[in-house]
Amino acid sequence: MKKTYKIDVDCANCANLMEEAAKKTDGVKDASVNFMMLKMKVEFEDGREPAEVMERVRENCKKVESDCEILL
Image (cartoon, rainbow, N blue to C red):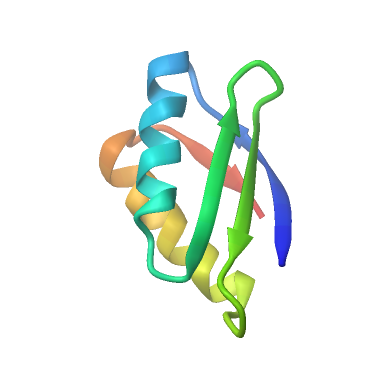
């Protein structure tokens, strides 16, 4: 399953850090961040609940960029 989320991030480097953090999150098959569009696309592993996985994605992104936001 793939979903797209609106994000709030200040710079392209921060967006890249968020993308890498999302990709390393358990339950995420792939992730990409488009800084210009302020969107994050996440592909979830089969059988995983997106809402639960996104909570961990948000926590991991906050570790690398504390003022970022992912709007669920």
